[in-house]
Amino acid sequence: MTRVFVYGTLKKGQPNNCRMEDNGTVKLLARAQTVDPYPLVIATDDNIPFMLNLPGKGQQVRGEIYEVDDNLLKFLDVFESCPELYQRTLVQLEVEEWAGEDEDKLKTGSIVESFVYTTTTYKPEWLQYPTYENYDTYGDHGLKYVCREDR
Ligand code: PCA
Image (cartoon, rainbow, N blue to C red; front, side):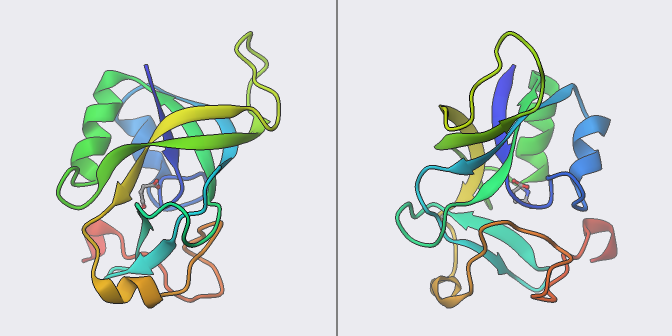
């Protein structure tokens, strides 16, 4: 099992969350935020969220930590076009709320490491885009994500 931090369309209530349940075994571990700030921008004609691998710029990013099995990890790498579009990198996270009552339960404020899909293959102008701390496709920005099936 592997930990993956999701901050975009894979979060609960966002358009690709169902892809996780459909393609392997997944368990929500915690809500968390990155220890370092990162720029989370919405880019491309399809309004795709990208966390740029530029720690120190942008804002601390909020998301969810999941435990996923190997099947799901393989699916997610393909789904996120990793390593061409996104790269699966490691990130330090601060636990905000642990989801379960299991023996591995971590206290609020604990630091954990997890994989995350970030990118270094961005266009220079993306650095001028607004950054978000808590991505929501339906937010005030009006930049609703275009699902693959609708492209
Ligand atoms: N999916 C991944 C990366 C960005 C996206 O939309 C995620 O939710 O973390």
